[in-house]
Length: 477
Image 1: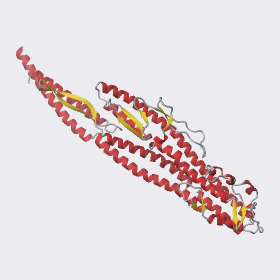
Image 2 (image 1 turned 90 degrees about the vertical axis):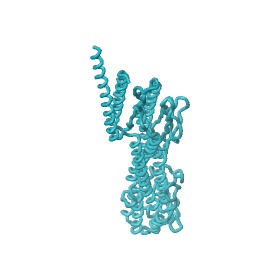
Image 3 (image 1 turned 45 degrees about the vertical axis):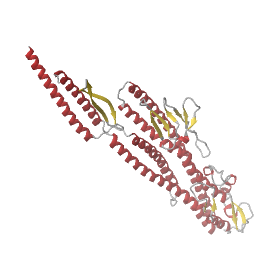
Image 4 (image 1 turned 180 degrees about the vertical axis):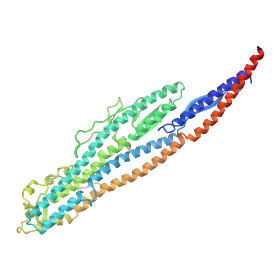
């Protein structure tokens, strides 16, 4: 080997070792940075005239298990959806309480029954009649409060849908930007590893908001679709639009999330969003919370209907304890729990609770407790409730109320259990991804030692060549 070729080889070795040291140092420095993946640079030997020559440094690449990365994103979407639902259901459970809680709707309906039991023992006592009215008012107010709480949660979900849509649009815009830079660098053969890490961070943020699918393109860019296969980004990113509803109520239809791709008319993609924060918020707003409202309305409707007309030994006694019940249509009682209230006529004339206000029943006097006893029998008789999911359609009023309250607690416990399991699965997947694609500091330190040795060896060769050249020059002189 000539001195010149030895010099060239040693210099090439120094450069290769220095490049390896730089990459290892960068890996160690960024080991704890979220989304950073291990970088590597392959080295090969240049062959000139059939002889090994200098070291050639290939493009810097990263180590990523794409399938495992996709699994983590999908699992993240599932976990974020469950987190949102679990949070809202926790607050809903606090509003409903538990059947045994004094403030629960179940307990207040039981208090109403107890007030009639007291009235049955003292039908002529004005205090007993007043206690019935107070208990009935407490029931109506509890219904209104719970209905308001349900709709407040729906309104909050509606507002947060708008925030999620903004986050999605921001992520898509940044992924489009990263795509452009990656495509440009790929075209001239430059490394895109760091840009791909940055793009993956935005894809991860997008997967928190909604379930997505991604596809690699030959030029290094990616395409993004919803879980339902609507394109969100190919050459350019689409725009999602959403208008929150100003006033949310039981009978108010709420807006959908629309996709505007600039070609077709904007269309709803609610059906294409199955998980993520946005999926959870849509499920809460359009399914979970409306079901709670339906359950409340069914109970309020049945309670009010039963108090319209009471069967007293084959006769009928009109009480109409709660207004508007007679006008509600079974199956069309939407929002009735928000409207229920004690009839002002009964409040003005409490003796209606003893004597009735029309019908075929005729009270035998101030000590007649037959109407109060009939009300108690009504409480103890199973009723056929307006069909509603999740609850037994045939039950006593107290049983139905207890079932309603218990359903909210059980639903919260179910989602909490699902969240715990799915979060554990995500943690295991993330750990596997870190093991395969992340930086192992011990390995990088060991690599640094080897690279430093290689650098020193090349430096010694370079020094030896320099000494030889100096001796040769001295001889020539």
